[in-house]
Length: 369
Image (cartoon, rainbow, N blue to C red):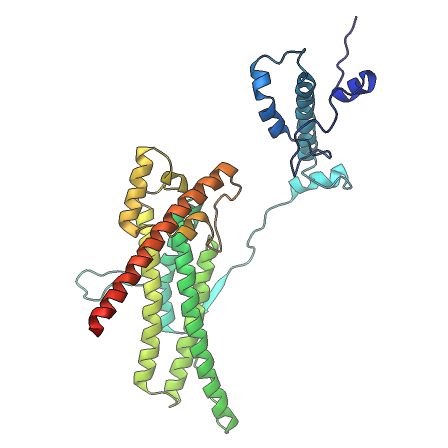
């Protein structure tokens, strides 16, 4: 006599429902309309299954239902994969069309046009020459490469790579604010004198240079944006100088201040890249703070000696770079670990801040005495 497999739905229809729908674990976001939770049911039935899953036990119906739900979920996932996750209203042919869709590519050539020697040097840098007393200059092109390396390191869940990118972005934004404010002041001066009858044009190169970009990370393009802002700032400042609206010394100071600010950012960013790329620390990640692995402990110790403690807000992800390859789909256990370590880091920061404040108060009291 042939036997027929009967799922729980048909079985309940014939023999009644010994396992009402309310007697199973539920969860939000369940793939089933009744909220059935496979994960929670597995946990609830773990001991029963470990004891052999006796058919005489009242939990047997839940055990059968669990198998049925697993099969249904597998079938749902197969159907979804076959249709590339498309809405049910879409035909199979339309759904599978996504497989033929190509990725986004750069058909054109990205270019940056530079008018000033200062901006060009800031972008290409200057190599150290033997016997030449002039120091080398780290250029934006090299910094773009360093930023790409740091961006790639974020895929390892490296908190110091995140910190380096956040620091870089913050510092660049400060420089850009200064550049734009000073440029606006200069343009206002030019507009003011234009109303009086003098129309001065902003200086430009007789042979501007166009450079192909082709960066391989979002941060490379941020460098090109900084360079063109700096280029125009230099043009405006030299316009004021050339048209007798600003003296030589003030122009020199204005240009020097901005150049130093940009170079300080470049050197700080490349320092992070240089050390984080070292073989002994390259695989650093957030779990190194809690694992008992000796190599992980060495990586943390190395990073602490080199950079100091990572800020708590960076470690927990409260502060994050604009662009990252970090995995954000964390389990609850992983989130708990991040919060626990972040709390310890925050406590250490608060203690250091309080100690520094006490030192300042003591110093101020001694001075007043």
